Length: 282
Image (cartoon, rainbow, N blue to C red):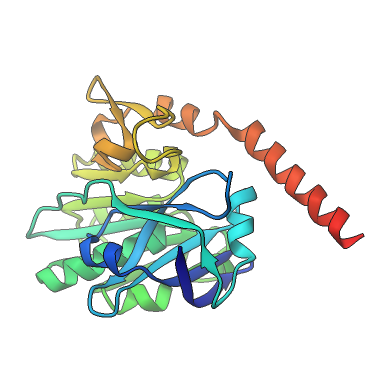
């Protein structure tokens, strides 16, 4: 079990947790993930590592409540324990040195970018982060990201903060010559449709791009096969071969379809949990 040392509400459905996990923090690298189980008999869910501190042994994760298990995790507070946490898992991405490195994050992707951008800052790289959300209140970790990147670009669909439009539109402006400059390498983390759009944008400009396929992961060990995806014509597993892959070689049509495979089961689990809460309240 790992104890929750700090909890911070980022949005109405998104929380940051700092937990005491010294063995994981000691071995963690930017871009890796952990597998969490909240209760006995519960499902295992993958969560990308947001930050780690080798000296204090603290590990940070960000959780968006989208299903039954993440909602149960959202009910935990400081002093509570998460039943199981295994990691670090997955391969850290290979990001070339030199040039202008641009991280593009949507939703929870902003949290995953924090660790990577901090590492790139320590390497002395020139970086820009583009993060997006439907509206200002749904943006997360903007202040923290601003501290670890040379340029932070904020995009909102409704224009309530920063650039009005999608992250890909702002990325295209940079490709076309808008400050802070042309991207030499792009890191894409977020919802599958967003990453597919980033791939198309960068492919047209022949800009190298890596994408994190963590939205596909279920078991996290390669045993379930739920995260199978075709990369460069070969079958890969997002959890053990990734989660980062050359975006220009990913079959995104297949990946998007696979990410929707368990929608009915997830909805059923959420409905059962909601009914249980209503019965307890009654």
